[in-house]
Length: 293
Image (cartoon, rainbow, N blue to C red; front, side):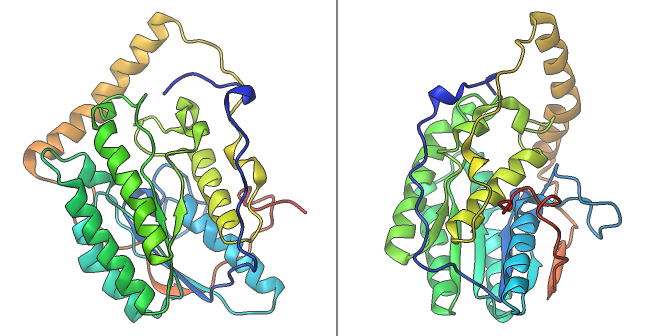
């Protein structure tokens, strides 16, 4: 990721919010490692080690529901490493059976990394899943892929990721879905918002995605989610070399090993929150994705 951007480099987002806030009673998150929340440590004592943007969104939704005296439940069926076909086959029917009225269906990033992937076929399957969910009465949140132009290892897939992102917007227009615009989040081009593996977001990255989602639903996410970080000191060549060497040893080699063996990081794992339940309503200070009064 590049070192920094100044605020002058990023045009202000034209904010679009619904005429009335969406107030779901049961939110179910579907997807892969992004929605599972990898690299965003959960608070001490949590049942799952990772928090993530979907948990943060659920906390904001619970906060809004509590303010209206309304019930709210949350389930998270996402599992790291899942391909879109697995998400559609395993998780979508479960979300429908759970009676979700809000579903985030975010996947396809792992597919784009596969050699010979047919992006149009992947997004056709995504659209069919959106139809199933909306026909069942759910509002659906989709997401573009992030722009990997500065991402080591996966920057070669930028063209495919761009096609995927364009298709997501087209699906949303046709089917009335909402879209998290990760591709357009210029702040995500800063390497400090990415974990040591350079594939998953840090806590601040997850916070910003959750804030965009809250804004998308008309519930007032922190408006600074799109603002880039202040400039960082430039790395020396030696620092860059040492960091890259650690990254290759600790992350690239194991990733390649799993690919060679046909394994996934999510093999044998169960969803982090398979049964819908109430969410602890944290204060705004505990969930910076929420807007301060």
